[in-house]
Image 1: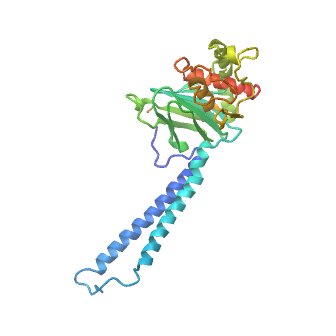
Image 2: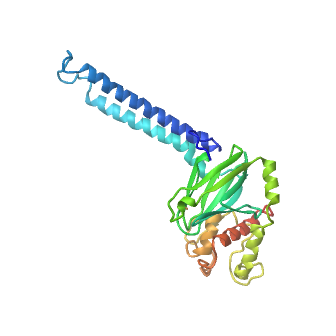
Length: 313
Ligand code: CUA
């Protein structure tokens, strides 16, 4: 791969990030020129053999002047901060409703990707151009970081957390994926490719993939194998929450809080069921930590989501 000086701006986030970078570069450059220029000017003006006023500092440099100057600088930088935050930071976590959900599992030392239709990839991610995607990311072991310089996106993937990263590719082509967090011996080899395709090519690519068991279907099988259906099934006599239709809904907790049923909430419920007790239910759910791996969790979450969204998966 060649190393261009300027990376392509290959996502909707990229131009915004670059704007911040170049504005900061410009402001810093102006300050450097101003300071260096004044330095040179004073060196010349106050050389030993030149006639120059060398008395006390003129009264214009008053206390008010100092305070004003300090406050002006402070507010200028706060403004830059607010602008940059609004420009970019907020948008990374927010995802449009029509975004495609793609699951990413990071582990030493690879990226495992699963598309909603069950198609799997290793160290590669095929995406359609000009369509928003939402990566739902988990780590199986240590902290990794999903980093695609051409998209200007980077998100740490912390074990025990569900990380959401939204962006929209805008250029067709191949882009480098890095792990951006030192994660052990082969960290530097934990790389991959993002392949952004035209919508039609992407559909053909998806169709050509080996017919993996679709994610929700595998989740449904696990749901029975692990015994979840024994309590949560329609015919169960155990007083356990019924799970159809709950995804994306608020749920009241025993301590008075309201939780949102999302990927992270369901993961917590499976791995750490004591973390949130749902109002009206006894805390009898056993933890499945150690019995399910990240792949199983992704499938279970997809299954529960499919119970709430009809058959979109
Ligand atoms: Cu994974 Cu560095």
